[in-house]
Length: 195
Image (cartoon, rainbow, N blue to C red; front, top):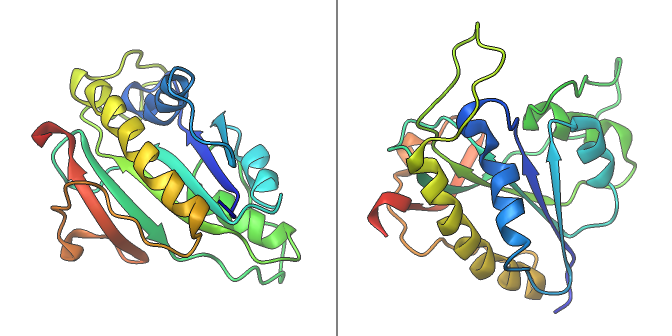
């Protein structure tokens, strides 16, 4: 194994299914990933994640809940377009944990290119309304997807450690590229409800 991989859980544990990323990281405590993988729960600490992305990793896998229009519990592996790091103007703000803002800040702060970034995303079933400050508890569907995400990471991370440029697939690809938002290239997906 030659690469270094960061597995980063992101999300707010107080906002329903947004707790998916931190919950996956907690589950990995019981089933650790191989040596060479650093596993951390960043929660909503965007600035911490931005600086950690500059620590010489070959690949970073962000684990997060993301509304993409799929059946709740569906896992997707996506590779976002990375910002170019142009330093014109003030640095981007990384308040909270919007992954696009965090990547923009990391690109702005660093002199070296960012690592390759993949996002292991889960379609949420419970999305808090804008007027809700706290919505405790994950939906049963997304909670069940945590186990599938742990399995996926045990498949993906060894591949990425051996070859950071590899494009590993989830075990049950069923996502159409036409469903992806602009700036996102799907590499594979698996429906947790179908496993």
